[in-house]
Length: 66
Image 1 (cartoon, rainbow, N blue to C red):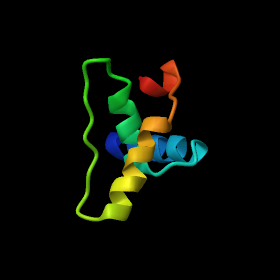
Image 2: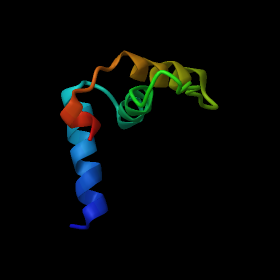
Image 3: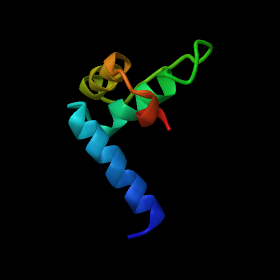
Image 4: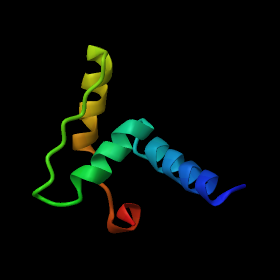
């Protein structure tokens, strides 16, 4: 398994533990980068945009943010 595959597998495991999809987890991570970061999650599909916006409701631990 490559290093990248190992990272993706860990992210998928964290997303499952948070009952989220990978995109939501990524949005949550970016949202935790600092107060000067503004997120504009979007998609060409309304349902996906709404789904992605739930990433803002995911809390991540310090370990998960590494």
